[in-house]
Image 1 (cartoon, one colour):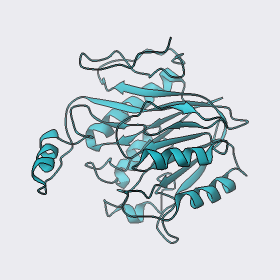
Image 2: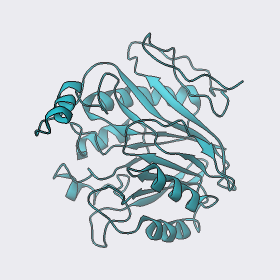
Image 3: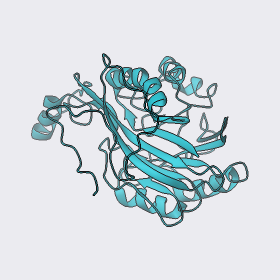
Length: 295
């Protein structure tokens, strides 16, 4: 069995710091074998740099996925060619710098990761994600059946359709981009774990990780405005998936909602031992609203 942690969009410096500090702790506490994050908003809320990539990899992250903001920091155009663990969506045209997939060797066998971007309400409009991912999954399955897919897309319908399209062919499909964690985690009939959106790693008191007032003013006036990354307490969101390394089928999927507590020393208690539909998180803050556990 391989335990995989995927964390949603990292938002600016607050999200980066929280992820870098918490990943080693969570790896030990939950017995995690492989960690993936979406880092496309890690540099001041737009894009990613080489230095940030290095910091995330040094923290124990195996692969960094991205999306429509991958090119927002100019230096990444050349850097992405030198770091195969930083992915851009696979459905960019031929000749675009970087790669959209990778297979890495682990102590529990090979793990494949694919990054794909949707087309509905997304800019730029890329090539057909269904065609590109079908071809890549077919190629990757000659190496491993343990395959994770980050679908960076706007609409739930496109994410669900891609998840259903890949059911039985990959281990897990997780949506990113909307920054709001959805409560539809499930395992499809063919053995593929799915969630529409893993959420974000960013400030709680915000609008999708940005300061609240400028966003409200933009909606009220329709005037251009800057949207600085918010400050304050951070929660990291994502999913924890247990995968059968022989079949590649997911055995469980659980939501993660873990407040950043840099002063706390997390207990080492092995597996979280929670029910499949129960979100994982530390003791809630006073303002937190917790999902009611099953049963």
